Image (cartoon, rainbow, N blue to C red; front, side):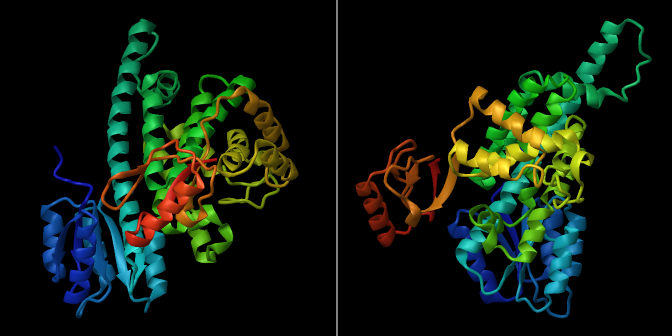
Length: 421
């Protein structure tokens, strides 16, 4: 068993008050915390033990916090890094964020909920990395088995060259249970980070499977579309969950700086997919799924048919799966955006596929104060002590909502609730 626990956190904070407050807050959230006031002691600890996350304060006597972060990155490249900053040098902080030296930053003074969300997001990404590494190892084995089988069945047709094993593995594995399990795992990890992302990916896979059948995509192309549908938002794990939450609820509430982080997610997803031989065929599909048909999209501003075909197919599907409203309303919206944001052919394919697809039920995250009678819970609702208040699938009545609000006044509940839509 690995010595790494996804709830072990390393703190390097000289200020004893800040260090003790943050340690106590994290321990109250059931995390195991190691606190060091000395940067040297912190680096030594990181070298000797494996932590999924380190939080560093930017106030270091006679030292440079960014140099410390570089040393930590060298000691443990896979360890996520968060910087606590007072905001004195935000240009340097943003550069560290852009280059990947830090995953995200927290400003002082901080809110406990803000820390909890940042830590949860960082730990979820670490867990995803572990799962992806396991998946990568499994895919290498499957690819080798496939290559051996091909050589054995070809009876002398090949020379034993494995250069095409990764690509062959995609098409072969994508028709069997291994890839279905892998897609399910990836979607669940997205759902841990934010339930809307996991649900949208699940719905996108179902719709794209039907579209692929309508288009009669060849066996080498359909897996690319399905993997892209499942993993199009995997780059979101690099963005602070609070920012993603705001973006999903109301894009207008995000700052330009935050929107720039969001717009970077297709490129990050591309790099993730390129790391795995069985997924590399979906990398360019994911990179370009936010390009616009009129050239106003990102990350490369491609236009019309210069956008890869599968990306053009995926784009309106992703839009549909992230929207709340009736199918007719969303399709009317997509139609109005044809020739602008979306390829008209792709919109027509989506409209044709929807009645033929068993689409998983939509889900969205709401605040407690936004609950209304008639809504149906998408997951169990517990009180602060872990006791079940209302079960998943419960259609809310006014009496249920009044009870929830009353309990929340006495003992605060989690402010976010998942409902079906």
